[in-house]
Amino acid sequence: MAYELYYWPTIQGRGEFVRLALEEAGADYVDVARRKNGVDALNALLQAPGLPPFAPPFLKVGDRLIGQAANILLYLGAQHGLAPRAEAGRLWVHQLQLTIADLVTEAHDVHHPVGMSLYYEDQKKEAKRRSAEFVGQRIPKFFGYFEGILRAPARRQPYLSGKRLSYADLSLFQVVAGLRYAFPKAMHRLAPDHPHVGELVERIAARPRIAAYLASRRRIAFNDDDIFRHYPALDR
Amino acid sequence: MAYELYYWPTIQGRGEFVRLALEEAGADYVDVARRKNGVDALNALLQAPGLPPFAPPFLKVGDRLIGQAANILLYLGAQHGLAPRAEAGRLWVHQLQLTIADLVTEAHDVHHPVGMSLYYEDQKKEAKRRSAEFVGQRIPKFFGYFEGILRAPARRQPYLSGKRLSYADLSLFQVVAGLRYAFPKAMHRLAPDHPHVGELVERIAARPRIAAYLASRRRIAFNDDDIFRHYPALDR
Image (cartoon, rainbow over all chains, first blue to last red; front, side, top):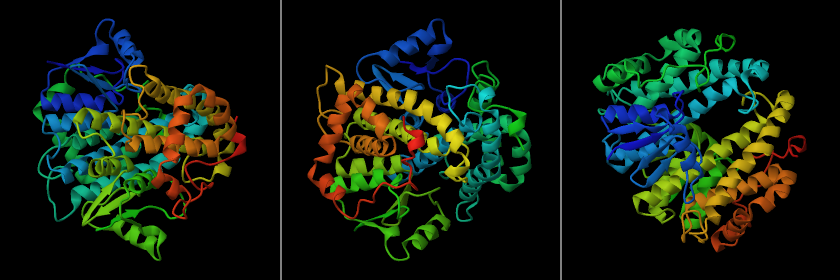
């Protein structure tokens, strides 16, 4: 039985964290909204009685709907060995995922500080003010944190949770890719401060299933309707 | 062995979601940073080598540190019967928690749209613009969602996950309390649209351990250094 992923068909967005896990797992899945009438199917499930998700992405597994990207990953991590089995490791990976999710929200809010119902063009001045803090303080703080974990001398292990890849590694890869698209100058300048994060990103990109996915048409290109947007005025 | 909760000592903040779960569980815990030199202890753990959390709140359980409020609740839910044991119910409650966490972030960003390193006074105009969307669209959307779950005719059950209280119910209580403090006019006007949410809030407040907690000095009062802030200019 194939998983059914429901997410907006023209952006990577928060759905991409789920897509990367499904791809790395080699899971059988349908990206429903990218098919004909798929967005209608997505909207119908959001309106369905019962226990609907609040918003996409959500995953249909048989007759169950699982919502919230980090929660979907909690599920997939257990199903496909993308998280440790033991409780301590499982919670550690989830904690990292929620920290990455916070960074993703901040990356989005840089270009939409005043509200998501307004166009970027209506909040350019505010976005520019906000980007100063995001690029100057928040990116360094988050990446300093992940770098510290990967660099810890007692560990010397390739992934955030140790020897084995987890969904949090895939998500960190995605955030770095997105931030490099959105803030190329800032990320280039900051790269020497987090070499282990850079190595992790290369290691993920070279995994055979991820490499195949990134080269495929299944990978939607970054674009400026998405979470990560390249507005040169916001890059420093 | 008592849990050690680490969170900023003068605000409810994201720590409050954890405090409510610990209180409802009748768990033995120390709110470390509210004790003498407690903030130093908190900062020392954030700087410790190994696998530190990114930010408070975090919970020390023996020699383990568990970070991210929703992740701590995932742990406590399993330990103290504050979430269903079966996987489907466990993920459903966590999904709700992550949706509540999104609402909490938006409630914070209303008064800090341009950046958290700036004072509210330096972003009042932007905050006023953002509050129009938050009060006019986002609060109704989130509460419409929770109301729909509680009202579903097939359910007729008192809590978000059915017959039994979960940590998501406690968190929804906290969000409603916070929004009533921050946006009294708007919440008063919107209350008739979500009567089941209002009933849930009363039901939680009347639970003996929660009632005792709310009346105790352990409950920090709402204040305007916190996530939920009462700035009359932002209330409608």
